[in-house]
Length: 219
Picture 1 (cartoon, rainbow, N blue to C red):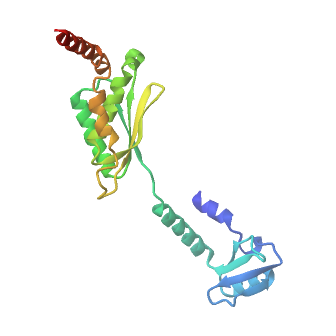
Picture 2 (cartoon, helix red, strand yellow; picture 1 turned 180 degrees about the vertical axis):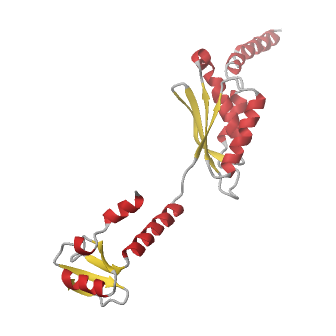
Picture 3 (tube, rainbow, N blue to C red; picture 1 turned 30 degrees about the horizontal axis):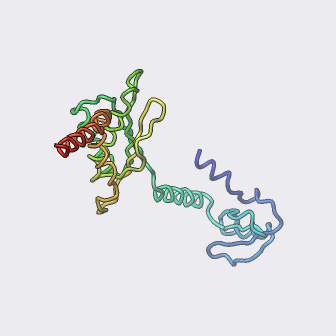
């Protein structure tokens, strides 16, 4: 199919229906020729007349072996694809109450993916009422990012999308300093118990202390 696409891309020989063309090629005197003269030159050399630039004025044609020309074009396309960078994204799924064994197993895989140059898309999937533990899922993902700070950097902080909370990590370049991901290491210990700190941090102890100081002053 790819060869057919290349064949359809270029007109050759009698399929070139213009009055004159600009001729290029090896062992060919370059210049503008009538289409009949150009076809004659190609025929005398046992080669084909290939239209390589139809939008030029006049169109540019090359005297060449058509099959060899197609092979070179195909080879060039492969080289261009090889040079283009392909972004690979590996997904890792957690539950809101993932145990340490499962966590460490997936952490090991994530390290391997990042070392290979792939991005890691980690997410916590919430089923039914487990969405109530979304804070716990966020803490898990931030811990995950913290444990991978030597291998990747956070590209996207945890975001809740439907029933999934997602974090995106991209691989670090070799030799890059370990300072591009300061936030995730700090957040997990602060949010490890998201509800409890809010209840503990109150103004009551300060108020009671103030009362004691006043009573001691009166005495």
